[in-house]
Image 1 (cartoon, helix red, strand yellow):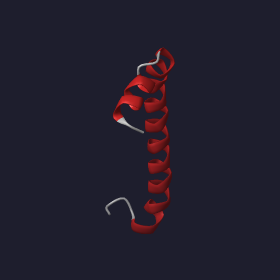
Image 2 (cartoon, rainbow, N blue to C red; image 1 turned 135 degrees about the vertical axis):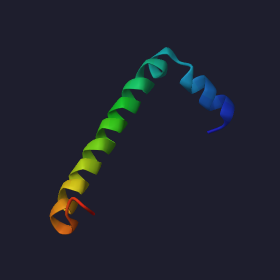
Image 3 (cartoon, rainbow, N blue to C red; image 1 turned 90 degrees about the horizontal axis):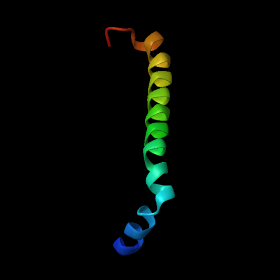
Amino acid sequence: MTAVALKSHLSSPLMARLIPYLALFGGMMTLACGTSFAKTLFPVIGAQG
């Protein structure tokens, strides 16, 4: 995508409203995956690391 096409795509009202929600969803998914991974590591290496 060129910069002009990207700028016009992001300037649409729908995308402007969706971007914060998509960022929030992505952050929540990252946190959930990280905590699940950490949960499996605690029995293996312990809390002290």
